Length: 268
Image (cartoon, rainbow, N blue to C red; front, side, top):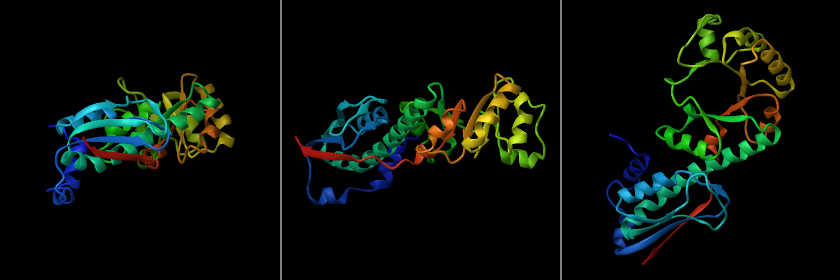
């Protein structure tokens, strides 16, 4: 059975009844609109539309994922039972503002990085996604123009510094016929040792001042090697790293501040 985060949110927010709407005697048909107060990249709108339809609402309009909207634009419009619309209001607004913030921040970072390096890939570490929201946040990253890194432990080989610490040595003979080998070396010397048997090397917390020299040497050792950088990189620093590497791995976009969307409900 598929579990939908919005249904979970509805159960948490309205476990028994909306006692305010019931007490006021509100009934009949109404219209709900979400409107943005700022520029935003849309994501999650198809999932929200399907959620509304499962609640017996009719969706008249919704913005497509990946669309850039401006202040005052309607994001989604639905009609139906007023009691249901009031139940949908807060959880749907929270859902949209959080996911669209991820998509918008991803777009801003991709745009900034590609001003310096048009070929760079911005990859988001999606194992740091909020619990229960991984698929939605992956889609938000993609709608913002980014890629996702490691959907789960089962789909990528990434040998981290903790793995190396436990092993006590480099796994020089490791091979995988189905997955690329990514390694996160503990220092510069270890990065050079890993170059020959790695597909991707992630340099963690390397400063831009040393990055250019390290990347050039790694590429000399293995011309097919992709080199990425990770660790504490946000929007303000992405340009500092973009010139020297093939990819930047970050997670800051997953915690972007929610956007400013408003909700309008009226009787029809």
